[in-house]
Image (cartoon, rainbow over all chains, first blue to last red; front, top):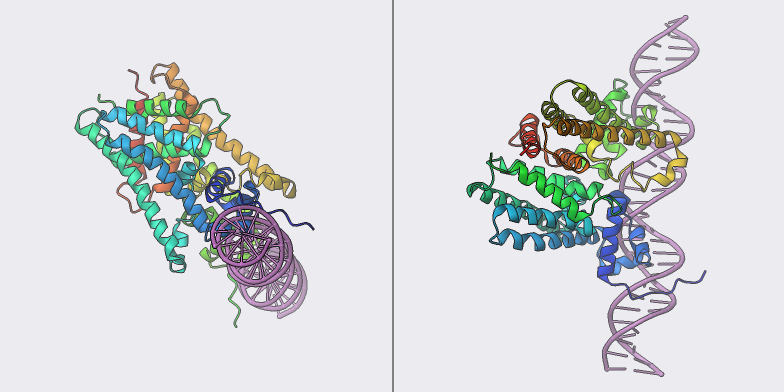
Length: 210
Length: 210
DNA sequence: AAAATAATCTAATCATGATTAGATTACCAG
DNA sequence: CTGGTAATCTAATCATGATTAGATTATTTT
């Protein structure tokens, strides 16, 4: 049996993107190292040159996703636009981040009870680096939520929004947005921008003062 | 080594509830037959007397969940209340279903890219019964979504609600509700009823005519 | 060109979880 | 009480996926 020629043109970034795609397509529990490797026409063993283990690779996907989306949301939240305009832009960034970037999708949807789950916590002692990165990821995800809270709180204080229970409102908003990563299909009726538009309309109407 | 005494007091329903709890706590990929069995103080092998295989057991959990929630939503949707009242009741039923019944949570959250996933589809030929039950589950889940669409469409036609893109609005609403299954903790600030109240307020405000 | 290094391959190992087989126990019926 | 059946146990098998080890290839450096 002839050995498959070695192809050294694949870099770490290619592997990371491949992993994000497989995650999105197959879900966490059906994402194997073999599938990811096949996506870039390598074998599973080759991935270990670039990433310590599967956890490290998948965490890298989540980190890329949260980096991307935070990089977009933070400047908006810090801007001087009125709160309602900021919220609309943030919803757009979040939704299109989910529809257009599979790593963002993974970061938002697949952290649930997967590699950052309670179940894996007892194994922390085996790999302190992964445990630390896991904590950092959770902190950044929480930061993401805080940005939404701050903007809505600002809108309420300035009389632009009606008073709501801000933490619950934000969980409602983020849940609806994250779920886009579950049901969205690129061949669907609407694209990411259009979906974001309608969602922003819904939540801004809900925040409209009486 | 003394053999563990056999305990025949455990019935199929006990196992099913145990599976739902483990699913909720550990997530799909960390739900092992061993864990489920331990929940009812049996061994993994004992589960196979009651359920054909793991898929059949987990599908039974999902079916129990969707049965439960459809059984609550259908009478509300068919009632003669005005659409806004119906929607509020349905949101309550859905949210409290998620917070109070782990099988409902599993049915709503864990169908995602798990045993009803695209990845498992190619294996249908191996177990036609599971494949058929899977299809039936998906059909019932779709029926669930249609009930919400119908009520909102009715509200719009009667002038109780402002015009919205109904499919997207419902995806937004269901996403927010299903996500409660992700973030809700029994020791949190609010219980299921209170969360449902706030959510209903949000979405009914968003539907209020101008 | 030769040597060193990076990257990949194949083959194999290991661990884990699902499941089976047969022995055993618990319970029920006659 | 005996026999039959339901239910469970322990031990073992099997399959699969993660990972390692060493050989090999591709690329870079000297």
